[in-house]
Length: 141
Image (cartoon, rainbow, N blue to C red; front, side, top):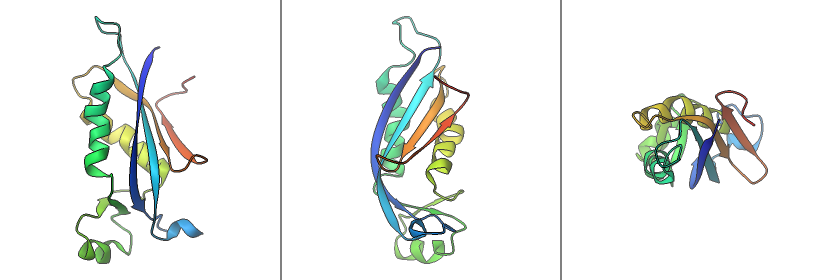
């Protein structure tokens, strides 16, 4: 199997509802999110043009999550924070790196990549240079 990957950096805030320590507080990260795509090589010899990954996945991140605050829709703070700032993004999951990677790979990517002939086989959400979560379709490498 051959894959093509592209990463995108975004800055956004979140809080992890129910977290035992400091991540339960409002805070943010400079995230690096990597999408790894697999598919058959095209007539040029590519899995997918890197600009298509940028257009379909990275620009979605840029427009929807970059410089926004991500909050679980069931978070007790959701109502108050969205009243103060209507640009808060309410998510159907607690915004852990693991849940973000799963959502991006299983929900967003199939919609965004429809018709391209490729699929995301790995999505990595790096919160810091030391900490990341990785979703894999199957064991890769």
